[in-house]
Image 1 (tube, rainbow over the protein chains, first blue to last red):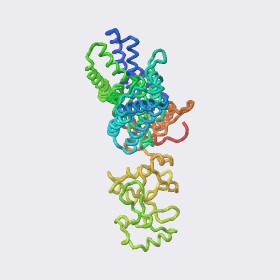
Image 2: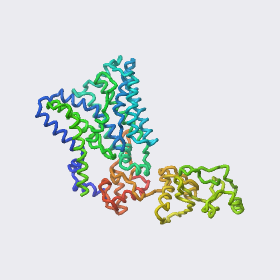
Image 3: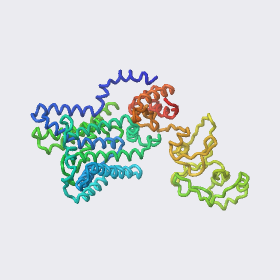
Image 4: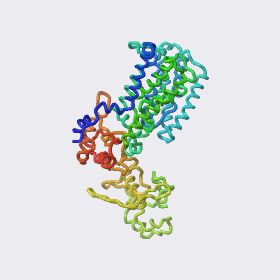
Amino acid sequence: MASELDIPIQQGEHSWLAWLMSRQAFWVFLALVAACLFLTFATNSFATPSNIFNITRNFTFTGVIALGMTIVIISGGIDLSVGSVLCLCSMILAVVMHAGYGIEIGIAAAIGTALIVGAINGVLIAYIGIPPFVVTLAMLSFARSLAMVASNNTVVFEFGPDQGKLLFLGGGALLFGISNPVIYMIVLALITGFTLRWTRFGRYVFAIGGNEKAAILTGVPVRRIKLAVYMASSLSASIAGIIETGWLGAVTTNLGSGMELQVIAATVIGGANLAGGVGTAFGALVGSALIEVIRNSLGLLGISAFWQGAFVGAFIIIAVSFDYIRNLRQAE
Amino acid sequence: MFGRAAPATGTETQIDEKAVPKFDSDDELEAFLDTADLDEYDLTAGERANWRRCWLRDEGTPIGRRETLATCGAIHALNEVDLTLDEGEVLGLMGDNGAGKSTLVKVIFGNFPPTLGEIHLAGEPVRFHRPVEAREKGIEVVYHDLALCNNLSAAANVFLGREVKRRIGPFRLLDHKAMARHAGALFTELKSETRPRDLVRQMSAGSGRRSPSRARASRRRASC
């Protein structure tokens, strides 16, 4: 039987090491480890507990959104509205709590807003058929404008009776001194990874990204899945917004501005293919971590912060080239 | 006037109910067909030539014979198709490019319903709005472009749309092992060398890629 011989043949031809080495996320992870090792020896402030604490906490906001973005990208779409949704949901949270409601109501309102926004994106994309780039580009403007309306374009820094809870949610450290957002990010990454690999929904997302026509023909409920995917993306943006608000202690209307591009960069560096069909939750985290380490290290090495963008851009090209070079070799 | 769908959309049949006379028996229909004045009706040459075969069958009221007319936009892809397949029969359908072979298959498989006419399966009329409905009645298709997802494994493609799951607590998870095993069995049955866990993207084009499509179509709905 083909499947009986299957595993010994695979082990002979492709050991797990070969499988690992064929994954872009693995190489980016190696680059990350190498960078951290280099920085540990080149500077005396990188490997300190407080710096590690800062780095891990800082990349959670991008990392959480990158998880949602990875799902969207695997399905063959894109979501440019995540930065604005982060701002809108943070603003809704802030305004609701400022008005005196408890943190649970605030969080429910923020998440509810995100699900509505995601549903609007999803319906326009999946059921009406407008391209994702256009829909989410429109939502990018729309959502941020709503955030300004909700707050009358002011800074909100008073969160009513539950302010302490919110600040602990985003800025505290419950377990072993690990920043709380890091815990949320790891849990969400595990959930995302599990969903992609072990649920029917996850497989359908890959199928839609790989060959949408084939998915339709074989009876996959494509439109429903796409709707869910965009709702998940907005949901991840709202979660990131809630914890970032807790950490910052204030919400301004330019929160998350430009974040969508950073998130997309993180997912692409982590191995998600913009054409669809490929991506991992681990890759999303690794890509986000690498960008944050670059940002952090430039300061520690005394290099002007203006070089940050150059490094991120270069890394995107290098990380993505890996796949292209490998495909070139296979074609030969 | 007589039941041709108006500005062809290829989706729902639009019949001018008032204009189509109904008959209580085949005899009445025959009498009508014999004596009707064709000039009264706005008929094409083809419809004139197939006058008797162009009438719809309504539920319980025999007013005509089977016919399938599928229109796509302003072009009539299929016109007056009368096809009968018996159990166990193998039929080869041949035609030029653009003759309508693929369209006929898509109509049978439920991608879109015929503009006029009906499909009968084992004597009962059926109407499919989605491929899933056709599949539930036992109609399977292997497409000439194979309809495979390159980024998934062969086993994943065989089971696309009808994954095997197992319960762990409150969760229903994909049973990768069972799907690989069952797909492997199907490939062996088809005498193929395809390995279930291989990605389609990495297979050579040709027989390697055809197997997942054929295995998907031949998959029985029995438990694994």
